[in-house]
Image 1 (cartoon, rainbow, N blue to C red):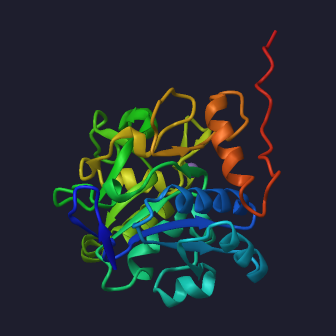
Image 2 (cartoon, rainbow, N blue to C red):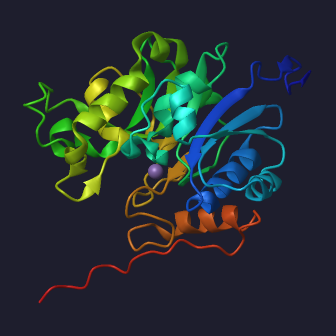
Length: 292
Ligand SMILES: [Mn+2]
C-alpha cells in the first residue's frame, strides 16, 4: 500500500511495521492504556505500528478494553509468568519476574525476522510519529538510549570502582531504548543484564533510595556501548520542553506530582481520559513537609 506525497513522490507504508514493546502489570494498566492510546493517536496516518505488551495480571477483558482505546495499531499480548520465563530458558527468580525486567527478554520474544524493536516504558505518553526513532542510527551499537537524570555512572553506582567501571562514563535511562535484536541475541545482552542484577540484588538503589532495577544492569553491561538518543525521545517532566516526542513520568515525577510540570500532567490526563480508564489519576504523595 502507498500514496502520493505532497511533492508527488510515492510514499510507501513503513515496511516492516514499526515494532514497539512495553511492559505492565495490573497496577500499571491505566498507564499502559494511556501510552498505547497516545502512540496510536500521534502516529502519521501511513505509519503502521505493532505494539507488543509484555504483561502479568491483566485479564482478557482488560486487554480488550485497552485495545478499544488504541484503535489503528495492532496489539500483541505476551504473558510473562514463571512458566514463560522457563520456556525462554530464563530462571524465574522472583526479583526478575517484575515488569521492569520484562524488556530483558525481548530478543527471545520478538520474531526471529525482526531486526529492531523500540522499547517504551508504560509510564509515558508518545507525542509524535516514531519513524525518526525507528530509523535512529545505532552505529553498530546494541542500543540507543537517552541520558538519565543521573548524568554519570559514579552518581548512580556507588561501588563503580569495585566493578571496574569508568565513573565518568555517561549513565542512561532504560525507559526508552532502540534495540538491535540480532546483536542482543549474539551477545546475550538480556541474559547478562538479568545475571548482573541478580548478583548485585542488594545494590540496586541509588543512595539507598531510588531503585534502578534493570537500568543498573544495563549500565554496567553496556558501559560506553550505547548510542545517544536526543532527549526529546525520553523527556523528563520536571524539565521544560517545547516539543517532546515522548514524555516519561519516571520516579517521583508521576502525573500530578509536585515536581511534574502541569503541561505534562495535562497531556497524560488527555491521553488516559481518551481510554476506558477515563477519570483515573495516579496517587501521588504530597511534597515532604519542611523539617523543623
Ligand atoms: Mn518508567
